[in-house]
Image (cartoon, rainbow, N blue to C red; front, side, top):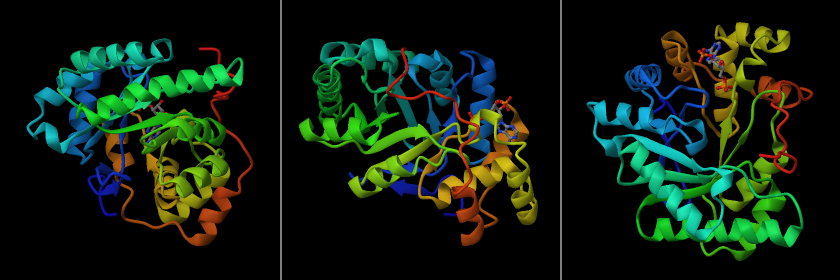
Length: 283
Ligand code: A2P
């Protein structure tokens, strides 16, 4: 890969640009619109939002205002937890589409698995929600469907009932939190892993070991993190509202992390995590 426009190919053949522009905690106003414009100028062609980020209107406005056609920008949104279930998921999807002002999405994700309470109940909830996703996919409203924050046991249960398997699983992943078990499961199942909080939401950026490795390549720790995710075969979703950082985070194709340094980073002890365990979260 040589640019953020280069793609991974999903199991159904649909192409997804290899770095996504994250918008978690980006406001529903001009700041996000401006940031998306900077991102597009810097070469990003993939924008990641969610109903819960409460910025779908701003993301939609930004996309409408671009000089490049809609078909050249990959847009993801996510179903919030309060909208699980077949009918509610279909309605929530309509809402997201309306807020974005679009007539299709490239990717729609279940934001978090139902995972608490009796096993058969949460499994049924996820399967019902997934049935709505399969319908949206078959009806052509969304080009690819997937999940987020699913661990192997959530995926196994979903896939034992599904007609169409998830194409993507978006999870927390950064140096200090490599999520190897979930990634191995996804790799074996043909599910592309996307990484949220690729910079640990900023928490890993002042780590001395990462600073030392980054300095050897003449890059920043943010660039090292993003490149490390790509070299692990996953798709990073860095978020920034700062023009220089937006450009910096897309500029990760002029160096290659050695096998030895990849191993060093893969093996770091856990740090910099959000602390949100999909089996434990109460939202
Ligand atoms: P800001 O949006 O003010 O530029 P993550 O993508 O892991 O969630 O991290 C996002 C956080 O990291 C935001 O607070 C963002 O700040 C900051 N950030 C993004 N890119 C960089 C960078 N290249 N250098 C330093 N901080 C960054």
